[in-house]
Length: 92
Image 1: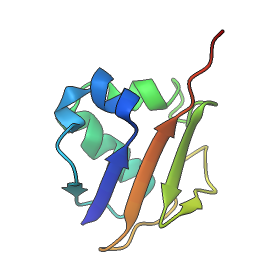
Image 2 (image 1 turned 90 degrees about the vertical axis):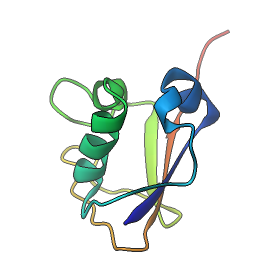
Image 3 (image 1 turned 45 degrees about the vertical axis):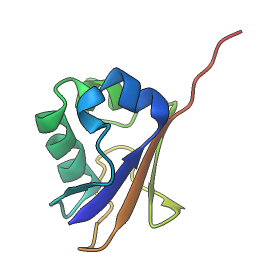
């Protein structure tokens, strides 16, 4: 099962994800996003657009490497993968 961490901002917006470390069964980033959305409804649309692509200001790292497939989220996860999901905040 993949171990998932999210930024403080995402924990505040989705308090269901505040219990860390969070471990979920998933073999790809897409499956992981769906699993997170099941626990925290609205999460998938918050980090992905209408076509399921990762939003511009969201980054996902698997084992300290940024994912390659931002379109289909097909990057694979192993049973011991560590996933970090970060949303960049902007503003003035």
